[in-house]
Length: 299
Ligand SMILES: [Fe+2]
Image (cartoon, rainbow, N blue to C red):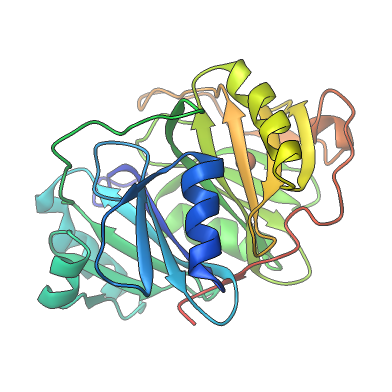
């Protein structure tokens, strides 16, 4: 791993939605991320921490991931990171001062990766003067983003070597890779799973207690939110999961618990069987709507 790109965390996800009012209700009332005031009707901010935002919803014509925001460890890493992506031919560009101000972020830059995914790197975001207000669910953090990829070996190599994401585990048959944003300790803040087409697989929020998972299932059943997988337990990370759909049919996950890695001398990546047991130790079967919706990229 290199020390040019040192991440602090997965900062935020920008999600394209087709009916922003419906989605604002869903992410605010049913997921339990906290809405943050904005006077622009084309996007909406939500947070799961003291940050100004950890989710931005954008009104768009098709649902998907607009961009993935990654926070670097400190401001002195921004320029070298920019030059690093420039040297790899990714044509990074700085976000205008007006846009940075509108999004309450310090200097930020973006680029599109070889698979059409837009990343934004930044080091500073406004903090809110009051704590994140948890409601029915004790959301701990925005956990991870998982993408569908039709080029797993190339994508794994790119995210590992160019993005400096450490490999935590791989799935047999080039079926997937779980990665951590070096040197962030969590087993994965990012992952890719094999699919026919590139796209969004799911966005995850980590919760504090197992009751958050059980309560969520009942809340979703009461509110006609499709639960598409779980509750179950992932074998690799030991996390208890629940997958459900947002109003556009994009998959959102709550999970409880995750392995953490030290920066120095982490365990080696394992090659896990591509079997139903790896995905759910409790023997659950995913609904076909799991990960069926969501594109990737700015459009
Ligand atoms: Fe997940």
